[in-house]
Amino acid sequence: MEFTDTIKQHMKKDIVHTTEDERLADVIFKMSNAETDIAVVKFKDDIVGVITETDVYFALVKEVFAEISRVIEDIPVIDIMRGPHAKMVTASCDSLGVHPCIDTFEDDTLENAIRIMQRSGLHHLLVLDKKNKLVGTLSSHDIIKSFSRSKVKEK
Image 1 (spheres, one colour):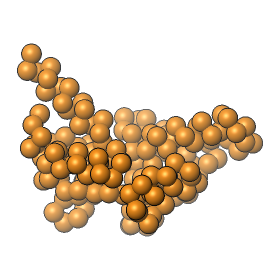
Image 2 (tube, helix red, strand yellow):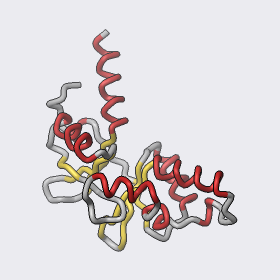
Image 3 (tube, helix red, strand yellow):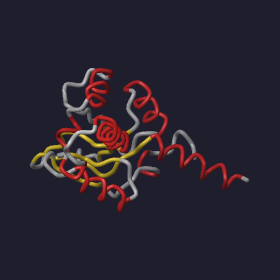
Image 4 (cartoon, helix red, strand yellow):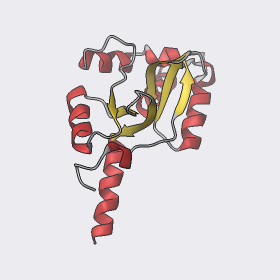
């Protein structure tokens, strides 16, 4: 792996989509089956946010420690997107949305993707093609996995 590699070479192409009103339990199931740590939240045809494994973790922790009568299966995605963790991330990158979506292009370099993640404080990017169509996702975990695989091949 080289930092000049294109994002397209390392991104996940199987995108999990969800809606604001889908139950969190269903999103967790979809993410698990797709072996991904991010789901793209849409309203009609517009992307309105993302749900990550970190959001799911904080939702689960809140349920465990708050002893709320509502069970995880009943929590709609929009509640997670408006939660304290999402607000903290949104404030850190001056985004106006309930959960920021930062994107990059599939032909951009990994070096630039790392720079974007570092500056925004986010660990996930949405990846667009030249027509601004969503074609994949890239996470810091994907970059680390690619780097790890390339080091194993070198040995």
